[in-house]
Image 1 (cartoon, rainbow, N blue to C red):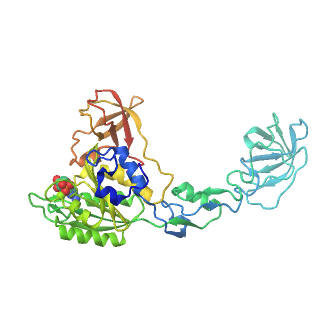
Image 2: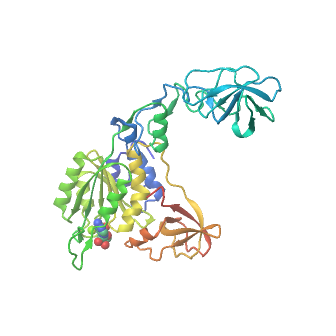
Image 3: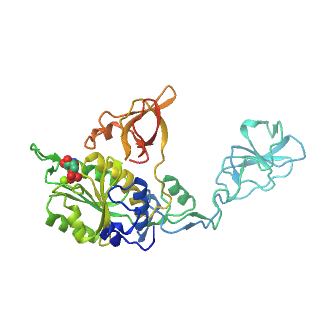
Length: 422
Ligand code: AMP
Ligand code: MG
């Protein structure tokens, strides 16, 4: 792909790229394109470390101290100073964790020491309490330990001056602990992403209202909000918008003024009331893709002013699958996370045959369980793109390759575990 192709040119003239076919977009191609067009946010803020879970480091973090900042004992036991091959040591006192003044011992001497206690001058090794015998004023051991055994060295976790977290690193509990171990009370993180989302459709009604035949409750807006909540971003819910060009346009323009990312559900297909395409081509640069994945065929990506835009399909399973498989990795990129990887596939034995035609990559919903020491997976009963209950029954996606045809019973298939994704 040539570097000079921009989104506007591609949106205006899809044929400007020889390998670009919006009517049969490969899953891998989508990620490739998005990688090219998504730009991470750069604004940052300084926040207390205890509020930084799920955020992204904005500036390399350099340690100003050694961790630990003194040689200390890894065990409760005795610090000993070797005296040739002697196995008896005279006890001279005790060192507790937190006692700051450094003590010392001479050859043939031992000093009781607690885990974390400061290693005394002259000490060759620490012998754990379990491996020695205590007498009134001396201890005996059976054999000499290796030199420096059970001593934790100054700077062995983090060295003074070392960069321990780089820009783009996603903050998990361990990162917060590590920042605390350096004595840092605050951290520079990238600003939270601002996402505005809404659903669309004349038939879509809010929960809590009385449903008429021909209507459907707005489930997408709730699942989308919940999926966003997991990603630690700022979101605003613009509710449901009717299939009306003027209202859709107004809503999108309003959203584009303040959002980093706009997400909509419905109206991106080829139905008579699917107006997203028309409206978006007037106010932004948008690509409409027929993805070669199932479920989730139609998907739109583009930009409206400075805001990124994703138009998810209206079918509830399709909108969730496209969110997890495409929008979530995109959000990670816009959030500025650089150590993100697409969720891995694992293998499991599929205990039922699956009907499949070659041509599309499929994300079937499956139930993974361990039986007789083996991980086996069973597809949920109904795989329709409107069967939202399949997502609640499942705990994994069964990922069937684009070229796969029918899967026989007991075939080893690729699965993607929901935990860590959803
Ligand atoms: P669309 O993509 O707008 O053509 O919608 C495809 C299907 O998804 C239709 O059957 C819609 O009724 C349904 N649908 C659209 N939006 C929602 C929503 N927010 N919640 C639940 N179902 C929806
Ligand atoms: Mg619709």
